[in-house]
Image (cartoon, rainbow, N blue to C red; front, side, top):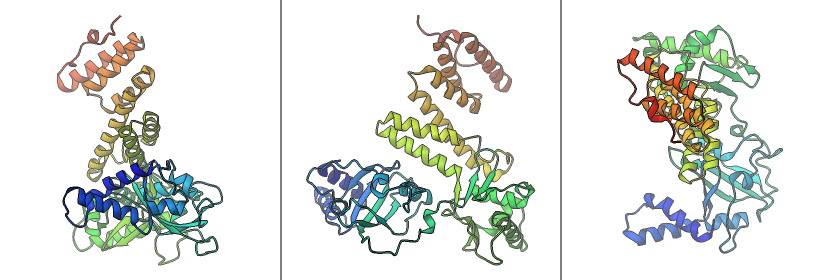
Length: 403
C-alpha cells in the first residue's frame, strides 16, 4: 500500500469521528494531518490480518519509512503470530482482538526488522461489527525484560464450548462429560452461552431457565452457578475466583478471555468472508466461508430444541449459515458439482424454500443427473403440498438446460 493511498485511507477511517464539526475539506485535511503526525504508530488491519493503512510514525517504528513504499504486510508477518518460540506462538493478535471484542493489554514483542529491535503493541476492534482492528505501537528495547513472562490473555482459551449442534465442553485436560450436562448446571451453561454478549441478572436467569421467581430465585441461581463452576473447574481452590463463570453487577456471564465458543468463531469467519467478497477476493472468501460452514455442525444447541430462550439465537445463526451456503453456491457457479453440494445442504435447512430447491434441481440437471433431479422435484412437491397445499412455483421442464 503506497503512502498516498495510506493517507487517503486514514482520512476515510477517521472522517466520521472528528471531535469538532469543521466544514468540508478543512476538517478532512486536519484529521489526515493528525493521523500522520500522531506521536505513536497507528495501523489498521482487516479481519484477515492484512494491512489497510499505517501512519507515518508506524512506518518509522517498523523501519518502512521510504517515500512511496508499498506496505503489503500482515499482522502475522510483522509481529510473529504463530511463530514457534514467540509470545504469539499460539495465536494471531488480530484474531484475539476480534474474539475478545475489546482493547488488549499492551505487549512487548522482539521484532528484529524494527530499528529499535522491539515494539510495544496494543490492538482493539475498530467497531462492534469487527470490520477491522486498530493497532497502536511505540518503540521498545530488547533489554527490557518486563514481558519475559507470557501474558495470560495470549495463552488461549482454557475452556472450549461447542454449541453448534449438541453441547460439548472441553478443557485443556480433555472433554468434560457427565450427567451434569443434562441437568441444571448444564442448562445454566447453555443459557449463558446464548446470552454470552451480556451480564445476565440472577432474576432473569431463574425466570428464563427454570420459570422461577420470588425471593428464593437468586439463591437458586447462586447454588447452580457454584455447581457449574465445580464441574468446569474441579481443581479450583475453595472460594477461589472462577476463570470461566464470572460474577458482575449482580449477574453472571462467561469470561470471554478464557472461554472460546464455536459460535463466535463461526461468525468471525463469516465476517471475514464478507470482507473478502467486498474486496472481490474470491479465493479468500471461499476459504473463510468454507471454514464457517465446517464449524456449523448443526443448529445452535440442537439438544435443547424447546427452550424458548434459545429460539432467537438459533434462528439468527441459522439465517447466517443459510446466507453463507447460498454465497458459496454462487461463488462456485462455474463448478456445478460444488455449487450443488452447498445447495443440497441449504435445501436440508430450508425444506420449503422454492428458490433454493429450484436452484438445486437446476444444478443437478446441469450435471446431467436427471433421475436425481426428478426425484428431488417430486419429493419437494409432495412435501410442499402436504404442508401448505401448494405446488412448487416452477415446473421441472422449465429448468432443463438449453441444448
